Length: 348
Image (cartoon, rainbow, N blue to C red; front, side, top):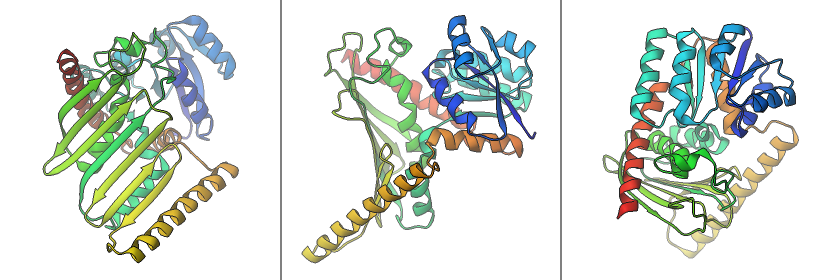
């Protein structure tokens, strides 16, 4: 496969990110878009100069030769669309969360095994540059044994989904959290292994009457390792903060500003504290300078763009996708359990 003919299904704002990213991949060509809303499908095709647009995936597959269907619809429709494409012999790439239920996720996994096509899930935070840097540090053994991770996903009240009373996310079992909890779940699994969710607490601080809750705190456990995830839609600023604690040091990541700070073991003396402050400042300066150079030289990529590039390479080279649907299933298992726990916490 030298060139990948890509079709985008679902023309909401998520699709814009896909269209932009696929345009940067030399081996890929966007040949069609589809949405149940014909006006939206048409306007998207016109805006991105895509020749064909359709209102159903069935019409698209019947009339257009495609190698890959990228599914950007709300998650409730993912399983139906993915299965239809795979049964037609077409590879699929599914936005997170892969599905909202374990039953639907299992349908995708079973169909992929039966058809043998490539199928992947976009867990894009795994491919943000700070996470890739941290993977390299951990691989070298500099952090030692990891025993705890804390993830904070902070959003302001102006979050595009939360602020829209009519957005489909508010109809999900866990509301706005259902759409975004896949991120901390797959990060927990990435760094800690097979985790279990122990507790979920939610609360209401903001004034959006259509949101039952807008603060969430969850705890996880993997053997003797612990994890905590905190999500808010009342923050003073957007931030994605990750702290990873190991026996040999601490890693502090900020995904939006794309910075990494490694805090190694130190002695509890005034001199060592002073040198440690200088070391941290130097690391932040190095990260910021490197980011500025990447942006200026047009080499900076989001985790989303990096993932799509790797997925394209997996198709071209007939390799395993960077995130498989089996991994997507494991995330959905935890997500479904968390949504049940959210509803119980709300009643309490």
